[in-house]
Length: 213
Image 1 (tube, one colour):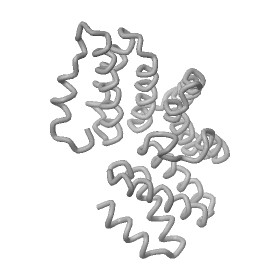
Image 2: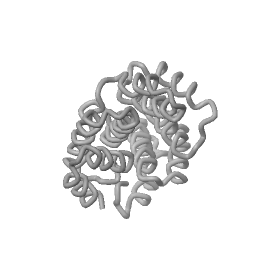
Image 3: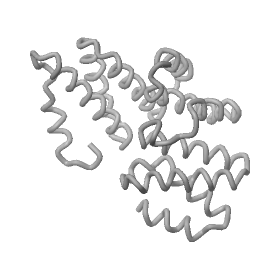
Image 4: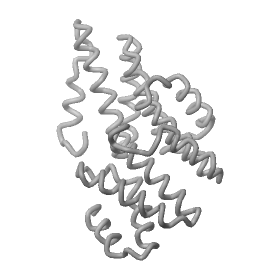
């Protein structure tokens, strides 16, 4: 889905109605992954369609992990599309429900942290954003790790802790650069560039801009 021009055709060909339970389980995994990728690249209408299909098929197949994955992606989608009514409570309920699935629960942590940040509650934002430890591609999906790192950079900048902001920015940027999928840096890039520029490392800030472009 990340730039593949055949993504929609491939997703449409998933065997969602296969008589084989194993095939349907793999199909729902594909739908969930495609929905997540679509949301992260900003294809919100398609992402919403895929989420509806994912939740329907996961319920029919009893695929609990896939269902939780889709629910987490829906929180991200609602955050980015401004559907904030009761979103904080939904995040907390999701985090509790998915407590035994930390990779999945991380979606709820990031959205809940960003809501707190938007409301000016920096301590609460930090608590939610770091509840699962430092954002790392070893612990969660790369785009989520980058976005969470971006939120922490913003929080450090708001507190005028420029050194912490720059350190977080460099670490997160290196992880994204290692993958080379720059759409994943969308929630990181503006704040990473600002952090390095404000600490005087304008050469590195310019290099980030060139890489991201």
